[in-house]
Image (cartoon, rainbow, N blue to C red):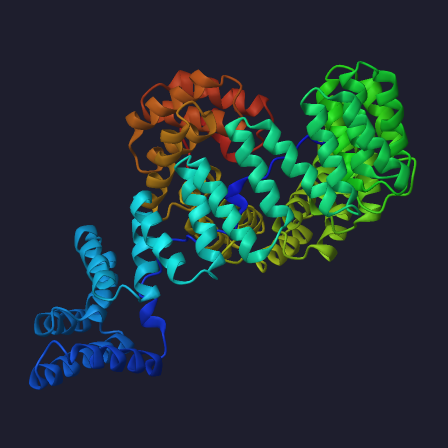
Length: 591
């Protein structure tokens, strides 16, 4: 709901008081610097002999040249020497001050800024940089003095007054804030911004009569600006002057019956005097009016959601009214989808809203992503694939759509299609890409390539995955396991696998991988420790893991346990001929 009286934040005044720019003076053109130097060279003739002046000019101008070449260390040394030759030359202190700021030598920077301003009090650049420095040090009283001096020398500096206004606000000096606003008004003339700023100051002081006076004056000066009358009405309503507020609102609506601000303020008015039914009527009127902006309708519905947290029937009624008209944008539909999700409505009904959003804005990536997510939960992978393909047309650089399409192909055992989609997604990688997503792309590609027996390409994909995310646990496990099957790079495999069990010490799959690598390395007793941990955390292991358990038990001298697990693996569907030989011969046989 719109506020009854919207005060203006003084921080919104244009902030000229930015942090000091490093070497801002150095950024001037060389010609400007030369003229600047010549001007001050004339000044110092009165305070040094000709030989000293000549030497000073050489060192100072050479320092400026070195600055232009980017040789700042040399420039600093030359400026320091120039200062020794002519300790009363303001410009050399000013130049040195920037270097002291870079060196974070605040005391020397302060002394240099102050010396430059002292030696050349009429130089507006020096005074302003000194004021800026004080602001960076949070010495606002000194900064105020510098900027007041600037203003006294040039009463046309609106930017200086704006900075003074902010600093007086920081100091809670309301009297000086009003004085500064008066000066701004003298310079610029009366304006809404200045009046609102004055009103805020008076509000902070608790001087309600002056607030009303300023607001009334604003209305009188701008009789055709109806929003000012609404503002006056809001202030009156906020200050318990309901009848006077109603008078203002009615006056506005007489001239403009569909005035949104006046109508929303009338809702506030009726709530204030406990006529909620009348407030609802106006709310309905606004929602059903095609002239009411989408932003206003959204604001009204959001406020109603806050005020009626448990009355979802009422809220859905408001949505129905607002959506009964053709929609030019998707704001209200998006809010309804979010509200339905909050109320845990069925996914199918929420999906219908997302589909409506996409009919209006087919490039709405967020709506499409939510629709894909809900469709994925239903395992409708064909629809996921179609949705992702459509989304890629409007958002070709959004990797998430390639990711989910690739995964959907994987779920359908369509490895070639999955690989093609993932490669398209990888082509969209840039420096802004999410490392987690990019890493997963390569991990999935590595799994598919290994399944297709393209081992070299598979390991390259895994390496790319780990470059983007070194702790991609799933990739580390699979990479390590596949290396162990080939009995290659076993030290690398062990290191990768060890990372996985450190990250998830109760993950039976990871424990089995690590145990198997130790087995291949003939570290049988160690392998037994980890495979028994795998059994401990999951006694319903796959038939492959059960065969590994049997192999490890055999090599640690526990033949009966080995045969028990080999038989268990066979009964669970492991049809390996090697396994059958192990059981028959009651011994471990390497494939």
